[in-house]
Image (cartoon, rainbow, N blue to C red):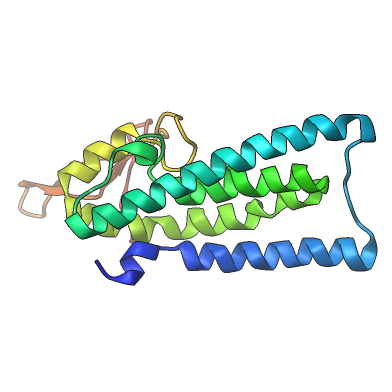
Length: 192
């Protein structure tokens, strides 16, 4: 497996997060803009931050281990951290480690760092999913239908990736892989 395939959109998310963190740190340093919890609440928030960050680090480490092993075996990974979310590395960083760090540092503005990362994730993750769909076919389709894209343990969204029959000009029906059927019956064709 090529390095680009292994890293996916990770480098772009990293740079986005780094830029957002620099902006927040700059606001703190130059403007004194900081959102802190009251002193009495800080012991609880720091404890919660340590728990969040530790959970994120464990989720991230497990997913890295599985990706390295799966890339050697060239197989779709659906166990361990990937049983909880299709993107455990991204989830670990955006949903656990960064918010946990914000609570530990008692600067709640850092909780905003994942916002631009989530936007970039939403815009770019389709590329990764298309590649996985092409590489693993129906196995990935079934996996995507039962495991959340980002939030660990959540049910997949109302949009599920399915094969859908479309009429051709001759009146025959052909299957089109990657067609997304929405809960309201509409179809959407990613990449068009």
